[in-house]
Length: 79
Image 1 (cartoon, rainbow, N blue to C red):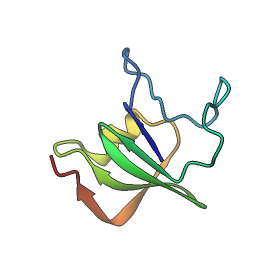
Image 2: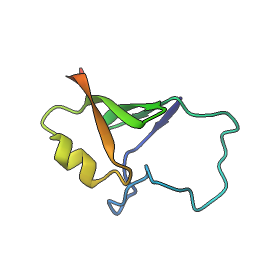
Image 3: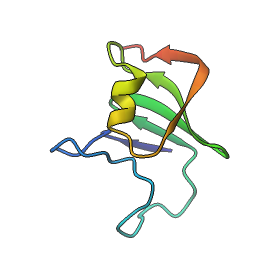
Image 4: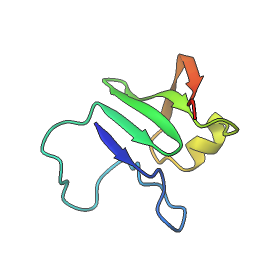
């Protein structure tokens, strides 16, 4: 489980294909919670489960480096 902001202060993706620095977490991540989405890590990749209201999947993908898979039951995050 990771909770973080989805992008850096200058708008670059924090969810990337490959880390460029040492990871601080020692266990495998299975779910990512950001200010824009809830993403589950599955064998096929990253599965988008919940998305911030008023944000399209395309907008979210533009600030997420790896390709997102979209859950059939995609929900809006309840604020």
